Image 1 (cartoon, rainbow, N blue to C red):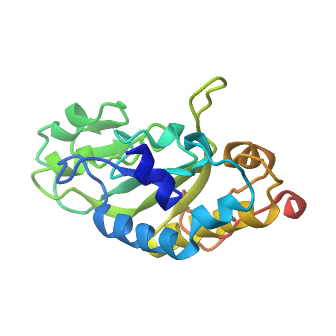
Image 2 (cartoon, rainbow, N blue to C red; image 1 turned 135 degrees about the vertical axis):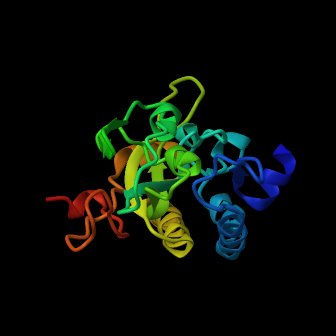
Amino acid sequence: MQQNVQQNGFQLEHCRPNCPKSACNWQNLYETMVNKLNDINLIQALSQKINPIHYHHIPKISISGCPNGCSQPDIKDFGISGYVVPQITQKQCAECNACVSACLEKAIKRINREIIINWSSCISCGDCLRVCPTGTLSVGQQGWTISYGGRVGRHPQFAKLAGQVKNDEEVVSWISEALQQYIAQGHQQERLTHFLESIDLALKKNENAQSGHVSTGLISEDQKL
């Protein structure tokens, strides 16, 4: 596996196919990401920056279909996790408490026939949507959460949250732009993980977006206010 990774210049992992927990379908995103990373020709770009190239120099990216993160996006250079925000509809609640029981975050409670969601606790996993028999809870906003800078090793750390995007194209654009920034601005022999520590890749907030959602756009250190 490591030999193939070093030949391609990147490691792209994903969670298991057909998982009932998936908030988003990752297969198309995976294929699009592979094609884009191959177009960038990372191994050639890395060879001009780092010599010799070892396994720990190779960018590592993980795609997870939901916030459970089985593919370990929190400890990769770039992590991508699907999310789906529950939406409370006008359909009458059956008072079955299925959504309350399904929520591992204890973010849902029912008062009479009214469903109340604690948005500060909700992680947008979609478990409540899958068990609601009446459609009182349905799919609202959906997309991908992006993080960066995670790693294991001698000094392990969790990835930092960059923000959320709505579609596959925004994910691919964001990650390819971040890698191009590393290629252009990273110092000789500087590992990607150390470069990611030195810059801010937070997504620019879109003031017109709904609460909890941000749009694409990288912010480098010299752009911060």
